[in-house]
Length: 477
Image 1 (cartoon, one colour):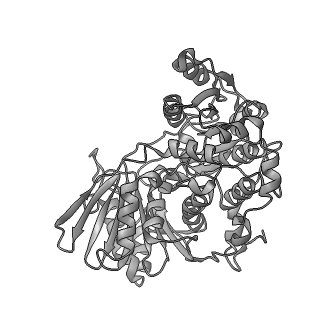
Image 2: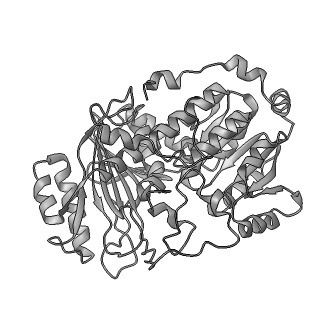
Image 3: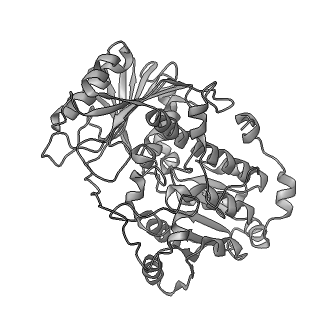
């Protein structure tokens, strides 16, 4: 793709797009009392949460529900009660409905981009869950669609709507604790194996599997559970790095003031302790070569020690970030604390968890100003793009024993201590360092302007993906 980052972020055809806005959105812009008609697409855990939140908003009506699982669709319609929302299994029917102003996309990752682009083309605004895309090229296309059709597109990294974090991060960038030296991101959450099947599994009869697969290959179901466990299969998911990483990496990029993808990335990780159908790492270390303060992401799905049910922590943090500065550090996520360099608490930061993020989206739908969004699609593109960069290095890695990899990483001073901590964690879980294999990814250099890996076509091939007709992304917006 030759289009540069600067070109794709540039607004285009705004006047022409405004002329084609649906009448109901013009009315909503003219009068803040008009009701915004919203559809929720994808109705499991996160979709249900969105349904309840938008249902409770003044001036908003959940007017349509969509999911290829008819049982889930019926259950959510019942929960919605007397509001009598339209129900669909095919999201294309949502796009066809001219009475709808906006869509909320809480589908599996592989549907995010196409659903967003179709919605923009249909004149609808979009709130799209994290990661906003399955690949880096997809979210570039999503930005292009938002600009071409003059749509309001919010990314579901809700902590961007936390004013306490915004104030704290500004203060840290200005040097409240001295210069920022390093930003460490942790996602330590205990998960279990997804099991291992002996052959293709029957797809539940109440699921339209063709629609569920959509842009991805429609292969046999080779895992016990269709739902949720798709996160750990490369065809549809992006692993834990892409599942929860967008939240924590968004905070890291925000506090660091980094407005491009990382100029260099290297991954070390693997799937340990489980002999199951999952493909993605459950233990993962990614180094993002930002300067002057690099970002280090650590993912752990195994417990602190074999037989335990609790996860590890780093400076008291299991899920969140530690911003290490010259004179102290910040540790937290939904709020947190500032500490001096001796580890003594300076003050507490009380956050709101981003609970006003959906309201921020609706406010921007009314104002028609994408600058009013706290996490516009270009923001989501970069934060989920960091996850994609890390996964690309992982997928291009070579396998070594943990002991071999440890020796190979000794010369890498910034990462050696972190790798040693990972190795100690695996040892505590009974993983044999001499026999267990770990993926040691290459250090990939990246051009943040062109958003390409210079001279590395193997890595560039993973910036996009193959699609299944008729669910392919447009070749050009």
